[in-house]
Length: 68
Image (cartoon, rainbow, N blue to C red; front, side):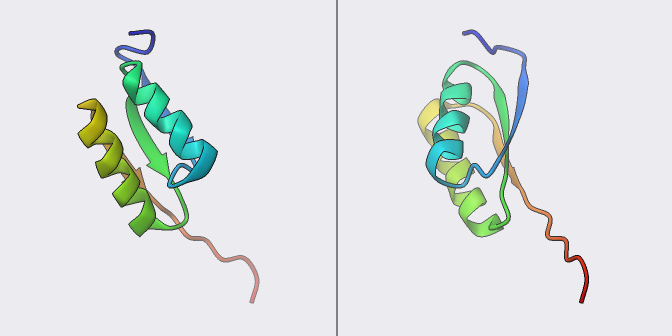
């Protein structure tokens, strides 16, 4: 396990390339934090990766608005 005892924070990981990277990191032993603007999709992705890999995966989202 190349990433054992490491923490990976991956943005845009609810789908696509970010999801694939998050899954690969978890498979390699990392504890993964998925960041995405869509918290519902991020949570579903985190649960899927955790279920498939047995690793701890969490989802976070923060929306910021600039201007009017």
